[in-house]
Amino acid sequence: MARTRYTAETSSIRVKDLPAAALRAVLREGYGRADFKADLLAGVVVGIVALPLAMALAIGVGVAPQHGLYTVIVAGALVAALGGSRTQVTGPTAAFIVILAPIYAKFGLAGLLISGVMGGVVLIIMGLARLGQFIEFIPHPVTTGFTAGIATVIATLQIKDVLGLQLGHSPDNFFDRLATMWQARGTASLAELAVAAVTFALLRLLPRWIKRVPAPLIALPIAALLAAAIGHFAPGHAVATIASRFHATVGGQVIAGVPPLPPLPMLPWNAPGPGGAPFVLNFAALQALMSGALAVAMLGGIESLLSAVIADGMAGTRHDPDAELLALGIANVVTPFMGGIPATGAIARTATNIRSGARSPIAAIVHAVVVLVAVLVLAPLIGYLPMAGLAALLLLVAWNMSEVKHFWHIMQVAPRSDVLVLAVCYGLTVVFDMMVAVSVGVGLAALLFMRRMAEITQARLTNYDTAESSSVSGSGIHRIPDLLRGRVAIYEIAGPLFFGAAQRAMSRLSGVGGRVAAVIIRLDSVPVMDATGLVALESAIAQLSKNGCVAILSGLQAQPRALLDRAGLPQRPWRLLIRPDLASAIAAAEELLGPPAARGADAGGGAATDAGGDESASKTAVDLPPV
Image 1 (cartoon, helix red, strand yellow):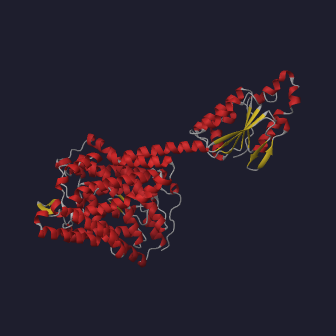
Image 2 (spheres, one colour):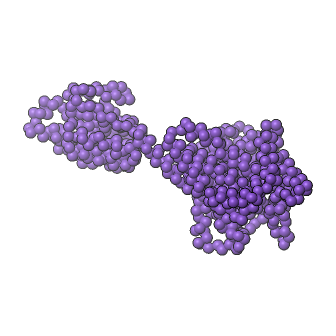
Image 3 (cartoon, one colour):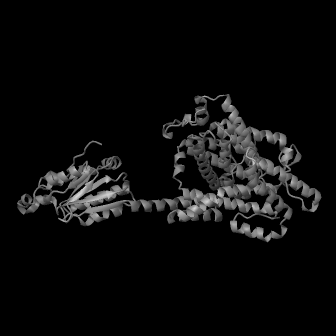
């Protein structure tokens, strides 16, 4: 199957064409037996990888492992079927742990599920409003900073299970969490540490020796056997497992570990609240959950679209960001009603999907089916997986997320402003949360960007005495006629004329008007002008007119010209000419001013003041070429 770009500009796609954009594009191109075989094999591989990860990520949040599995089954299939990326794999991710763990601790499972529904609604609105493309405007230092910060927090959360610490509670604050674990250091278990160390070593080393089999598929069963051996030969040092830690009640019967049931419909608000107490659904509860829901939507959208971009680079495709946001929103609304937690695009699983030969969204749907079959068939065996082994798996995920070498490389070579943004985002993510980090990081990056753009915009005043008598334009060097020397100044602006640079760029004109009869303001190199630039230009022209000086604008590009026309600037009662280029502007000045001797012969010199003595010249002098 040809891997072609299947979307035009997203703004031209109708809303009704957004759902299942990727799947419909694949079917239009032709989907054959060989394609299905490739997707089937890729889906099986990714399903095997997703099975332990889904449980580990759910446990990292604080909920029972089956909720992570249900997320893979429901959200993984829905986003693949309805989304805009051909190879994206969706499910619970490590990045969400930082957001979801505090929500679960404060509001219980019910609050967590409801926040997922609310975040899904926000994502649907973002998709329908075509906001997918704006994710591209989040600077790289911001995403790198909060990703590394999330990795740090995730790694810290795993210390408890890696060491087998017995904690009464786990505080939300990063430093309080460290202090609590330090105080519980006496409860550490060498058996748990040994299982975690063996698992981590296998996860790191096995990919070097065995390429075709996912490392967790070998490492975690070995960890389970090791934990069982320790429990058998040293009963006093038993290792905690999924079955010993989690229990579910089904039909009045208590089941240890993961229940062998598919996702079943439920009402999220009927789930347990904080501490197992009943959850009270009211406006105050929804209001308290709103900040968490916005964080779910923001992080979900960012991570999913970043994953889709990476997938495009690996597979040679192009995703539809709005269709992907819409599908992600629908999945996050539906999944909590099936017992699943919030989901987003999973970068590592997406990369595995592509490397395994996936060609269409069918592969991600197959991966969801594989996990469903595993829940129904292998649930009793899943209970033997040790908590320390799953914690080691998350430690590896955190290490891969952090991209330490890349982080350090940016710190060494990037401009100081980018390093500042990176450090601030990292610190805020660790100390506070991702929502604060992204908000502050984007704001700080925007301010620094505005400062850079202001520095890029330059203004140059060509001397109007006999020392300099020529100006360079895009079409060559234009000599200023001798009769205009000392009477005409050329003011050239290069760069965008926006609120960060407008006032500084136009400030030098304030002292020119009383010294010359005309000022040619060259705007050939001004591609964009905003309202602040317009106001600054208007103020400069008004001041020149007040001082008896004619302003001649030359070389207006399309956007600034359209803005001036909408503002009615050419119709204002001031002395203004508009010419298409510098040569015609100089010719207009020559025609307007005339020889100094001739002008000096006019009575009282009044003709020099009103640019020709004609009453109409004191009003509007306009020559607007068609845009």
